[in-house]
Amino acid sequence: MRLSGTFFLLILIFIPAGLTADSPLTSTDFYSAYMDIPEVRKAREKALDDDLADFIFNSDIRIDQRAAVINALGWGVNHSDVLKNYLIKQYGFNKKLKLQELNDEELLLLAYRTALDDYFHPKKALIYLNELKKRPRRKSRTFAIISSLIYAQIAFDKNWCGVFKVYYRARTVKNLAEDFRSEALNITDDYMYLYKSYCKKKKNG
Image (cartoon, rainbow, N blue to C red; front, side, top):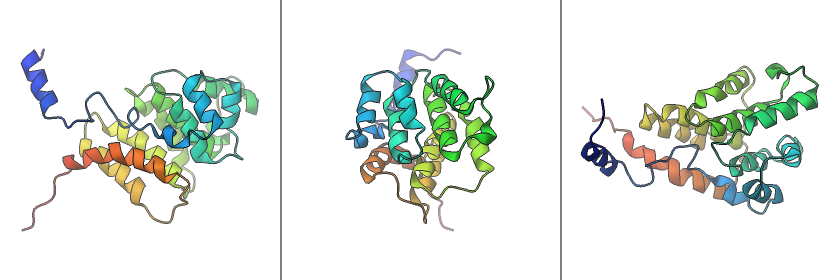
């Protein structure tokens, strides 16, 4: 069934400003809170190369800074294959990743990049997140926020209240290391809290 132009315009009228043509993965450019990091600036200006891959998978560097590089690379570009091939080479795997041998941070960053590459099909990232679920939960705000953006993107097509809820849980869960800059949280909050209005309050009685 084709929608008339008038009906389509009516749909747009009732969608809050800030949500049209946007989504949890494509509208949370928190890299701007990390522009003091040279690799973040480089990722924004140039293509992914081995030097950036070295940075992304360097466990001596804070996970939020590495996630910011992933974020700065943008979306809709196939960078995940480059990162997978980099890890295959680093680990000496035979043409295929062995997920069980990757560390938690590598899995998270691969999941995030995979979801950003093809944000219309974010479930492709679940192969990495499901492997993470088998392990003890990382008490990290960065892990919580990045994972929630992927899950929110999955919920985006069907449940806009669910988009807010999955992010809100990650945002408010206690006893996590606060390893995600407050300025970056403000950026993700500004967009993700737009979905709160889609959660109807239960009436008493």
